Length: 80
Image: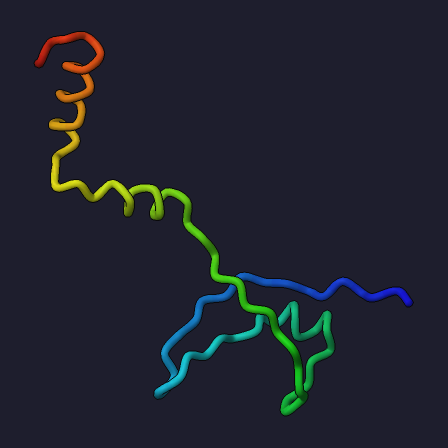
């Protein structure tokens, strides 16, 4: 049995009353022939933003300059 690869799209989840809703792009609706009130199956995978995650982990209470000064002192034995 050969399975057709499902269409995929990146969408933004929006507040819709007490729920969260998404809009399926027209291209996906057309390519998958989705009709109103038709039951469909979706897979949800939040998109990770690598830079946002990286910078979110650097919360040390120190400024970037303080980090640079510490690194300089450690590497070359001198401060700015």
